[in-house]
Image (tube, rainbow, N blue to C red; front, side, top):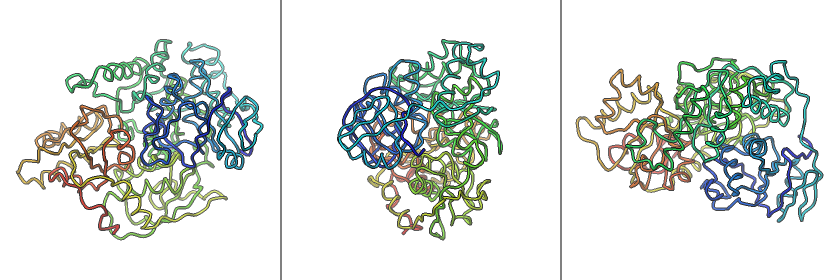
Amino acid sequence: MSYSRTLLTGDAQGSIIATDEPLSFWGGVDPATGNVIDVHHPLCGRNLTGQILFMPTSRGSCTGSGVLLDLILSGRGPAAIVFSEAEDVLTLGALIAAEMFAKLTPIVRLEPGAFARLSGARYCRISNSQLTTDAGNVILRPPATGELKLTPDDIAILEGRDGQAAQQAMKIIVAMAAQQGATTLVDVSQAHIDGCIYASPANLTFAETMADMGARVRVPSTMNAISVDMANWKTQGTPKSLGEPAARLAEAYVRMGCAPTYTCSPYLLPTAPTNGQSIAWAESNAVIFANTVIGARTAKHPDFLDLCIALTARAPRAGVYLDDNRRPQRIVEIDALDEVSDAFWPLIGYVAGRASPDRIPLLRGIEDKQPSRDDLKALCAAFGTTSASPMLHIAGVTPEASLEPAANADTVKISRLDLAQAWRQLNDGPDEVQLVAIGSPHASAKECREISDAVTKVLDGNPRSPDVAVIVTAGHHVIEEIRSNGILESLTQAQIQVIPDICWCSISEPVFPTRTRAVLTNSGKYAHYGPGLSNRHVRLGSFAECVEAAVTGRAKPRLPDWLA
């Protein structure tokens, strides 16, 4: 966008807190305090309450919309947010606050030159028509109204034919379509709901409000991992202050017709979409996997918008729903490495996201590595922690990697040194570990079998150390499969817990062992978010290193051989 515009109106004033690096509000901002908790972000430790936040865009989890909504409703949110690039997740959270709860937080998008000039100012005042700072002023255009062409069915929903909830949902979709520049809506065949995670009380408020209005999904809708093990949270010792609202939240979505799949790996389900299918998924790793590996089409829908689309079966035809917007916008050349372990895939995803934080990249230089679907699962999840992009391409691997790059595509390089530096950043902690964390995103049946085989081989009939907990999180569909083939029993005999419903990014004490001081994981996503979420050291390791640590209680030296 070449000019400055108000996305959501309102008056605000406050001190400026500015960053050049996007931030995920989920996993990056504590909704109870407004403090930035992402230990890898330059704003870590700063408080956003009452501030005017300047940042290019957001990144990471779709659940950021719920965190911002809760911050706004509790009075702990920023006074306003100023972006310089397209942004949906936080904008949607502020839109819900305004539409449903009459709480206004201005959202502004400045053209890049004005953003660069004004983000260094100390104080800011925002009105509907002007942004004023001690470094200069900018005239703001009003929110876009767009030229959205609605079908007769869309109009009927908007006029209340299908009830109050569907009407509210269509109003929100129309508002988001306008700010995204969409001129039509697209039919979707399925949805994946991310708003069922209890990231904050606002998630429950929204869901029960919609359910009480009679909301009912119009397309098959699966549910993401939630915040408790639904059947066992009471016996696990989960406090009622978390267990009861988290269970109510899940039940509200089931009431609205969503399937209680409770998995962050919906692409492992039998209902997974196919190449070219238009869907509406939330949960960042799932969105990136669907677009990248499957070739399905879905925007990175924020929490709450996912349900709105499920209630109407319609989404704004914008972003990567459009052919031209799926082209690579940056070429990422990767230094050749000879032999690599499976830890290469989350690491390269993490670094590629940093190299392309705001656009779709094409990765070159790893065509010969032949990643498995589990490798690609790990890569997509880690990429989503550092990039706002809903997809990427890998030359010779992913189905749309042959798309002609955009005319303005540039090229950047990732060196062995870049990878080694990132590895060290994700390995801050002691060698001695008390917990091995597998399943972020949820483990596949193949991964569970590999864990069982590897641990059985290493133990060779000897008991495993009781000083190290090993927990695998997986979806019910995977747990049923490994129960039927004996893998679950083998894992149980090796004192490895397999837990449904929750994922590492929502696990909390006492399910998360309280005595833990350091964690080893094979997930780049959890290695990034884990320190802020758990207040522990979290280190990244290969699958084999995780198995060895499960037996010995020690992590390998900091830099793997293939990076040394």
